Image (cartoon, rainbow, N blue to C red; front, top):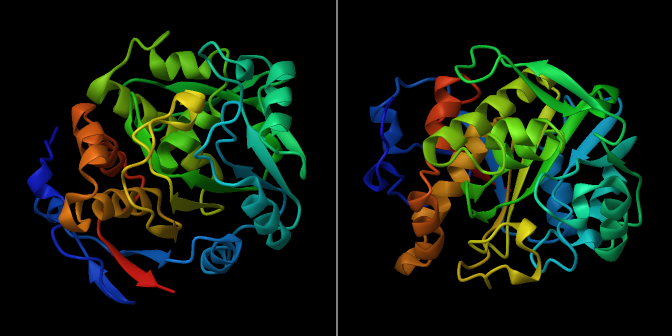
Length: 315
């Protein structure tokens, strides 16, 4: 297993459209085809709609919109008003969530639905996918799992849009598309316990690898019909699961990224934090490194989930 240090993170600034941006992780892995990550500085519903138009070619049929709807009154979630406007360009779409493992109103379906109302998620159907049970999906090539339990209703969707508020995380170091997908779609009763190994038994690199294997099951399940959007706004070191206790963000807002490659988009998001001028990303960098969060990226590469070579195209 390769170790990635802070020095291995991208040193160059984000470049102009169609210019390749590759990190020194290329020294660890052989160069492959470059993936595209689209970027806009327009943090608004219009920015979301525009950037989605660059990645939506294979999003067809019944579409699941996976986002973190947040604990009651959480201050940092993607604004529901933005999502309401965004859904106007995604026909036949449903917001999807699953119940949680930790003590919370979101641990049980009835109180979870009350939290959804509290936070303003009242404008669209919301499917709590494990409300009626679970389904085991295989983890191809996993070293920790052969299968993982997800909300059963995930089988009802043809495509998925992973709409993520990129931020820090108490256990994961950072929460990007991978965490939103893997932990977010795992069933509250079984899947989240598998990935966490009980109530937080897995930590550090082991937890990162467990998360990746959950993501692997889902990216294989949807194939080319899954896309990713990371919103780099109100990037607290705290997850949206920390309710009103979330630490006030110190990292400046940046923009929105989108890609069809889960590794490329999460790596680009991390690289942006490491390359902020005047070390403005330092609090989030400390959170990432203190939790071995970069292992998310290297293990996704080992599991052949995406490309760590990417170019950013600004729109």
